[in-house]
Image (cartoon, rainbow, N blue to C red):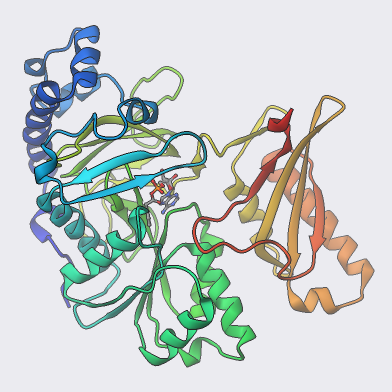
Length: 436
Ligand code: DLL
């Protein structure tokens, strides 16, 4: 079984990678300066000319690009090729504002598919696998991105998309897929639905899970692996760069290797814009330097993360990013403390009596922030009428939240299956403070 999809790149020396990055960066800066007024104006304002960029070391000279820039140039103002060459559009609305639109040439789609094929190979998938894609198909990049990657690998793709969980279970039983792609929260929903149908992991043939599009913790990974009888791997990406396949787990399941021949990463201090060294947490910034229709330079992802160039035992030399903790725009500031939903998820999942289904409700009462954590109890715990045990559990969770995050929270237990389930990205917070 092939260990790498693109061995010469995935195990290349640092000098080789830097050389490839430099060549592509120089070409892309010229292209963008010539074709996109927004970049030209911004580079002129910063006093940077394309010829100042001589290697990847000069990347920091370039101005940043923001999501707002994509909105301001909506829909095609940042494309670098004529629409005649664009064969596909994707878009993302995000939580606020106008949607952003990105375009791909045929070559761009092929590059993206190879990035996903590299990921699938790292997870141990081959052309003999049957891949059940339950990411949404449409303007969202998850469905078609996973689809094209699996097809590029030569695997059999089942383009299921989201929804109709009962039908998805029938497909899992009858078509016998060995790989499933979807959001981690949907995987949990599938596990519940399997149990409700009187089925278990032994009634399906899955071996590998490809999960991403939202933050998920290692604790959640363990639950998914047990519930579906698989190895669960992380895949990361964003619409503005290419969709899934920007980075991927390897067999070590810790950290994600970035396809850095295409996407050059940096970690910056989000306040000062200063580039931070390996191991420091900051905002992830990407430059996509091999795309024809929609290259992008120094794009501020808002994802909070860190990088590591340490040697990986899988043999890949591609730089690794840590599992993103969340987005700076999802970060809650509760009484001055920065909290990511994923940190609370880790605490909740360290207790066997609760489930990974939770909702954080933040409010402001008498000028002070309050946090309520609603969490579903497991069936067994719910059926037990031992009030004492429930009260003890409540105070244990609350103490652990306090000791790990430094904030107090009200813990509310809710009945199993009462919090809303999503087929796409999970919604974990209600911030009532924003309504004032
Ligand atoms: O979510 C692309 C994607 C589809 C990735 C399927 C993986 C699998 P957007 O809708 O533009 O694109 O959202 C991008 O989602 O900036 C992160 O905040 C978050 N995200 C994506 N993958 C992960 C992950 C797709 N593995 C935004 N872990 C990104 C944590 C993730 N967060």
